[in-house]
Length: 116
Ligand code: 5GP
Image (tube, helix red, strand yellow):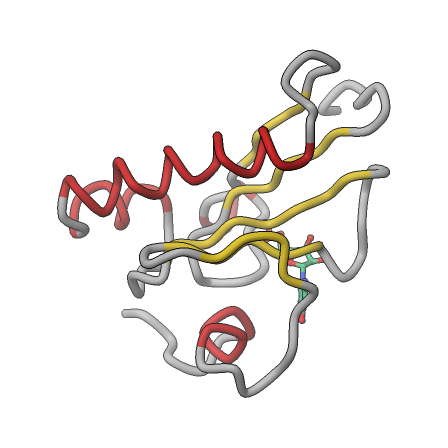
């Protein structure tokens, strides 16, 4: 059950601010408040969904394609395609997800260490 009052839902409703990197019809990208790398951007679809799996199963295909294309737009904006980057999505309890609105982490700007 999607929590309409999670922090990213509040950012989408503009109830709390964010440091925006990119926005379009289907998605919003902003800098992480507690960056784990020189570049740490979060990307969220505007579609209300808790996890990656929920997004993939409930959103329209056009919405899903748009979100993933937007990730590439942001990669281009950040100019990190050649230097490299890591995309992460944490899902659920075992995945260590803290904010229950599906999001992609884009980590870049330096060599990203091993996952664990
Ligand atoms: P998760 O662990 O759910 O994959 O990641 C949640 C991310 O959201 C964390 O990296 C955390 O620093 C970030 N975050 C939590 N609250 C806020 C906020 O209010 N604003 C921004 N910009 N990022 C946040």
